Length: 287
Image (cartoon, rainbow, N blue to C red):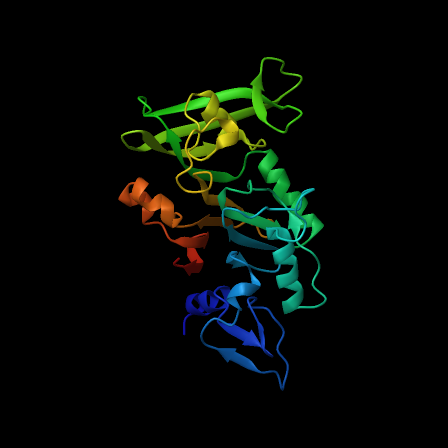
């Protein structure tokens, strides 16, 4: 069996050590331990819809479904990606610490999300985000037909008392935000676009596309008049950055959610969930 195959089996939860899932190649094994390799050893319901794309000693990368908070708020404290990951890590290793939040996705947005396993790794990753050294791309389905092929939106975003973000001419009151977009497919009443974030402000894509006159389908908070999917039609499909420990490149991509597939060109919807480290594939899973 090749090292690549072994890494894939670990990342997919197909290896167990003494009855618990083992996803780390460096997990210590001593005489008398029971190691099993086969079908998924991770109970499906233990992750509550989260999918682990990649995990090592420094970080864990997941695919978050729409409808799940990244972290707790005043209305929900238990059903969050953070809480489920914390429970998952402690089931595997009771002495495991808590995950550390690096960035967030809105509740009704799906896609790639990264958590650190230590404060030091969190700080390194967040510094990359601040320096814009992270490759972040999204698929969005917006209302209306965009006539231009691509564009860039620049503004200063500020938050009002209700938590809604909007552009302001008062630069001291807002944070500089830059969003790049390009058309992937035009539909009779909608347009599918690829969005690249240069900065990562709260609700940045949602606010910018809405102010352009093309709110994201299903995003009622930012002006959408329709909700065919029961969610915001925004998916974080790509995330790339240098590994915070050894500096090697990591790239994570996911397939589109089922409800997106017929609205994307075939070249976009054929992507697979993967993580790339340099030129070697460290994990891959089809959804």
